[in-house]
Image 1 (cartoon, protein in one colour):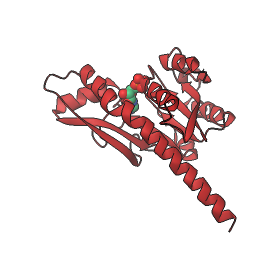
Image 2 (spheres, rainbow, N blue to C red):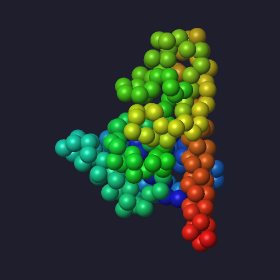
Image 3 (cartoon, rainbow, N blue to C red):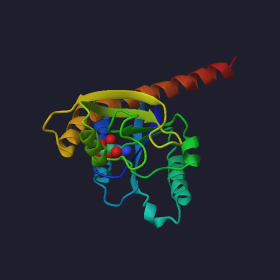
Image 4 (cartoon, helix red, strand yellow):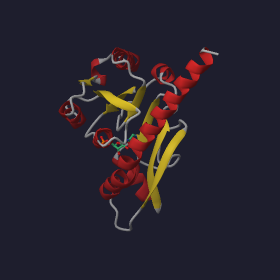
Length: 209
Ligand code: GAR
Protein backbone atom coordinates (compact mmCIF):
# COMPACT_ATOMS: atom_id res chain seq x y z
CA UNK A 1 0.00 0.00 0.00
CA UNK A 2 1.46 3.34 -1.07
CA UNK A 3 1.46 6.45 1.11
CA UNK A 4 -0.20 9.44 -0.58
CA UNK A 5 0.15 13.13 0.29
CA UNK A 6 -2.47 15.56 -1.00
CA UNK A 7 -1.43 19.21 -1.37
CA UNK A 8 -4.21 21.81 -1.34
CA UNK A 9 -4.77 25.57 -1.14
CA UNK A 10 -8.50 25.92 -0.56
CA UNK A 11 -11.79 24.15 -0.20
CA UNK A 12 -10.43 20.69 -0.92
CA UNK A 13 -13.41 19.22 -2.76
CA UNK A 14 -11.00 17.11 -4.82
CA UNK A 15 -9.41 15.90 -1.59
CA UNK A 16 -12.95 15.00 -0.45
CA UNK A 17 -13.48 13.00 -3.66
CA UNK A 18 -10.33 11.03 -2.82
CA UNK A 19 -11.40 10.49 0.79
CA UNK A 20 -14.79 9.22 -0.42
CA UNK A 21 -13.12 6.88 -2.92
CA UNK A 22 -10.90 5.53 -0.15
CA UNK A 23 -13.90 4.88 2.11
CA UNK A 24 -15.80 3.19 -0.70
CA UNK A 25 -12.84 1.00 -1.74
CA UNK A 26 -12.40 2.63 -5.15
CA UNK A 27 -8.99 3.85 -4.01
CA UNK A 28 -7.14 0.87 -2.57
CA UNK A 29 -3.64 0.75 -4.07
CA UNK A 30 -2.66 3.72 -1.89
CA UNK A 31 -3.87 5.54 1.22
CA UNK A 32 -3.94 9.25 2.05
CA UNK A 33 -1.47 9.73 4.91
CA UNK A 34 -0.84 13.47 4.83
CA UNK A 35 -2.51 16.72 3.73
CA UNK A 36 -0.48 19.92 3.31
CA UNK A 37 -1.95 23.36 2.66
CA UNK A 38 0.11 26.37 1.54
CA UNK A 39 -2.56 28.62 3.08
CA UNK A 40 -3.58 28.78 6.74
CA UNK A 41 -7.26 28.08 7.37
CA UNK A 42 -7.92 26.24 4.08
CA UNK A 43 -11.10 24.18 4.52
CA UNK A 44 -9.38 21.12 3.10
CA UNK A 45 -7.38 20.95 6.36
CA UNK A 46 -10.64 20.46 8.29
CA UNK A 47 -11.71 17.71 5.89
CA UNK A 48 -8.40 15.93 6.58
CA UNK A 49 -8.70 16.30 10.36
CA UNK A 50 -12.28 15.00 10.29
CA UNK A 51 -10.91 11.86 8.65
CA UNK A 52 -8.04 11.45 11.13
CA UNK A 53 -5.38 12.39 8.58
CA UNK A 54 -2.38 14.52 9.67
CA UNK A 55 -2.89 18.00 8.23
CA UNK A 56 -0.35 20.79 8.22
CA UNK A 57 0.10 24.27 6.88
CA UNK A 58 3.33 25.24 5.16
CA UNK A 59 2.73 28.89 4.44
CA UNK A 60 4.72 30.24 1.48
CA UNK A 61 4.87 33.60 3.29
CA UNK A 62 6.89 32.09 6.15
CA UNK A 63 9.82 31.26 3.85
CA UNK A 64 12.40 33.63 2.41
CA UNK A 65 12.26 32.07 -1.05
CA UNK A 66 10.59 29.30 -2.99
CA UNK A 67 13.60 26.99 -2.50
CA UNK A 68 13.17 27.08 1.29
CA UNK A 69 9.42 26.57 0.91
CA UNK A 70 9.95 23.52 -1.33
CA UNK A 71 12.50 22.16 1.15
CA UNK A 72 9.99 22.40 4.01
CA UNK A 73 7.44 20.46 1.93
CA UNK A 74 10.02 17.86 0.90
CA UNK A 75 11.04 17.32 4.55
CA UNK A 76 7.44 16.57 5.52
CA UNK A 77 7.02 14.20 2.57
CA UNK A 78 10.10 12.31 3.77
CA UNK A 79 8.99 12.29 7.41
CA UNK A 80 5.69 10.69 6.36
CA UNK A 81 7.39 8.29 3.91
CA UNK A 82 5.26 9.54 1.01
CA UNK A 83 5.37 7.65 -2.30
CA UNK A 84 2.89 9.70 -4.36
CA UNK A 85 2.11 13.43 -4.19
CA UNK A 86 -1.26 14.65 -5.50
CA UNK A 87 -1.65 18.37 -6.20
CA UNK A 88 -5.39 18.92 -5.80
CA UNK A 89 -6.08 22.63 -6.16
CA UNK A 90 -2.59 23.48 -4.89
CA UNK A 91 -1.84 26.92 -6.25
CA UNK A 92 1.89 27.35 -5.47
CA UNK A 93 4.32 26.45 -8.24
CA UNK A 94 6.93 23.94 -7.05
CA UNK A 95 10.56 24.18 -8.18
CA UNK A 96 12.73 21.89 -10.22
CA UNK A 97 14.42 20.06 -7.31
CA UNK A 98 11.27 18.73 -5.65
CA UNK A 99 9.59 18.08 -9.02
CA UNK A 100 12.58 15.99 -10.14
CA UNK A 101 12.70 14.17 -6.82
CA UNK A 102 9.08 13.04 -7.37
CA UNK A 103 9.42 12.39 -11.10
CA UNK A 104 6.38 10.29 -12.15
CA UNK A 105 5.33 10.28 -8.50
CA UNK A 106 3.71 13.73 -8.45
CA UNK A 107 0.44 14.43 -10.29
CA UNK A 108 -1.80 17.48 -10.70
CA UNK A 109 -5.42 18.09 -11.62
CA UNK A 110 -6.16 21.05 -13.89
CA UNK A 111 -9.66 22.26 -14.77
CA UNK A 112 -9.36 22.36 -18.58
CA UNK A 113 -8.45 20.08 -21.45
CA UNK A 114 -4.67 20.67 -21.59
CA UNK A 115 -3.09 22.19 -23.73
CA UNK A 116 -5.96 24.71 -23.66
CA UNK A 117 -6.19 27.32 -20.89
CA UNK A 118 -3.23 26.15 -18.84
CA UNK A 119 0.20 27.29 -17.66
CA UNK A 120 1.15 30.44 -15.79
CA UNK A 121 -1.81 32.47 -14.53
CA UNK A 122 -4.45 29.85 -15.36
CA UNK A 123 -5.98 28.58 -12.15
CA UNK A 124 -9.42 28.26 -10.57
CA UNK A 125 -12.16 30.48 -12.02
CA UNK A 126 -9.70 32.21 -14.39
CA UNK A 127 -9.52 29.01 -16.43
CA UNK A 128 -13.30 28.86 -16.92
CA UNK A 129 -13.52 32.60 -17.64
CA UNK A 130 -10.91 32.17 -20.41
CA UNK A 131 -12.75 29.16 -21.85
CA UNK A 132 -16.03 31.12 -22.01
CA UNK A 133 -14.31 34.18 -23.52
CA UNK A 134 -12.85 31.97 -26.25
CA UNK A 135 -16.27 30.47 -26.90
CA UNK A 136 -15.23 26.83 -26.69
CA UNK A 137 -18.12 24.36 -26.77
CA UNK A 138 -16.27 21.60 -24.92
CA UNK A 139 -13.97 21.95 -21.94
CA UNK A 140 -13.14 19.52 -19.12
CA UNK A 141 -10.33 18.52 -16.80
CA UNK A 142 -6.92 16.87 -17.05
CA UNK A 143 -4.79 14.84 -14.67
CA UNK A 144 -1.10 14.91 -15.57
CA UNK A 145 2.32 14.19 -14.16
CA UNK A 146 4.06 17.27 -12.81
CA UNK A 147 7.15 18.39 -14.72
CA UNK A 148 9.31 21.54 -14.62
CA UNK A 149 6.90 23.20 -17.10
CA UNK A 150 3.66 24.48 -15.50
CA UNK A 151 0.83 22.12 -16.62
CA UNK A 152 3.26 20.68 -19.20
CA UNK A 153 3.85 17.13 -17.90
CA UNK A 154 2.63 13.91 -19.50
CA UNK A 155 -1.16 13.59 -19.58
CA UNK A 156 -2.64 10.68 -17.61
CA UNK A 157 -6.41 11.19 -18.03
CA UNK A 158 -8.87 13.69 -19.49
CA UNK A 159 -12.62 14.05 -19.15
CA UNK A 160 -14.63 16.37 -21.44
CA UNK A 161 -17.57 18.53 -20.31
CA UNK A 162 -19.97 20.37 -22.66
CA UNK A 163 -20.32 24.13 -22.26
CA UNK A 164 -23.90 25.45 -22.06
CA UNK A 165 -25.03 28.70 -23.74
CA UNK A 166 -25.91 30.35 -20.44
CA UNK A 167 -22.84 29.17 -18.49
CA UNK A 168 -21.06 31.60 -16.18
CA UNK A 169 -17.49 30.92 -14.96
CA UNK A 170 -19.05 29.75 -11.69
CA UNK A 171 -21.61 27.38 -13.23
CA UNK A 172 -18.97 25.95 -15.57
CA UNK A 173 -16.50 25.46 -12.72
CA UNK A 174 -19.16 23.59 -10.74
CA UNK A 175 -20.03 21.26 -13.66
CA UNK A 176 -16.38 20.59 -14.51
CA UNK A 177 -15.80 19.62 -10.88
CA UNK A 178 -18.89 17.41 -10.62
CA UNK A 179 -18.70 15.74 -14.04
CA UNK A 180 -14.95 15.58 -14.54
CA UNK A 181 -12.64 16.33 -11.60
CA UNK A 182 -14.32 14.41 -8.76
CA UNK A 183 -14.97 11.42 -11.03
CA UNK A 184 -11.57 11.28 -12.68
CA UNK A 185 -9.09 12.12 -9.90
CA UNK A 186 -9.74 8.99 -7.78
CA UNK A 187 -9.47 6.80 -10.91
CA UNK A 188 -6.21 8.48 -11.93
CA UNK A 189 -4.71 8.14 -8.44
CA UNK A 190 -5.63 4.44 -8.31
CA UNK A 191 -4.12 3.94 -11.78
CA UNK A 192 -0.86 5.72 -10.90
CA UNK A 193 -0.55 3.86 -7.56
CA UNK A 194 -1.00 0.57 -9.39
CA UNK A 195 1.65 1.57 -11.94
CA UNK A 196 4.13 2.51 -9.17
CA UNK A 197 3.42 -0.79 -7.36
CA UNK A 198 3.95 -2.78 -10.58
CA UNK A 199 7.25 -0.97 -11.21
CA UNK A 200 8.40 -1.81 -7.68
CA UNK A 201 7.53 -5.49 -8.15
CA UNK A 202 9.36 -5.58 -11.48
CA UNK A 203 12.41 -4.00 -9.82
CA UNK A 204 12.41 -6.63 -7.06
CA UNK A 205 12.07 -9.42 -9.66
CA UNK A 206 14.98 -8.01 -11.69
CA UNK A 207 17.14 -7.69 -8.60
CA UNK A 208 16.53 -11.35 -7.71
CA UNK A 209 17.52 -12.60 -11.20
C1 GAR B 1 -10.09 22.73 -8.82
O1 GAR B 1 -11.00 23.11 -9.81
C2 GAR B 1 -8.74 22.40 -9.45
O2 GAR B 1 -8.84 21.77 -10.68
C3 GAR B 1 -8.17 23.79 -9.60
O3 GAR B 1 -8.51 24.45 -8.40
C4 GAR B 1 -9.75 23.92 -7.91
C5 GAR B 1 -9.55 23.48 -6.47
O4 GAR B 1 -10.76 23.09 -5.89
N1 GAR B 1 -6.77 23.74 -9.83
C6 GAR B 1 -6.12 24.61 -10.62
O5 GAR B 1 -6.67 25.55 -11.16
C7 GAR B 1 -4.62 24.34 -10.76
N2 GAR B 1 -4.10 25.07 -11.87
P1 GAR B 1 -10.80 22.23 -4.56
O6 GAR B 1 -9.90 22.91 -3.54
O7 GAR B 1 -12.24 22.29 -4.13
O8 GAR B 1 -10.34 20.83 -4.89
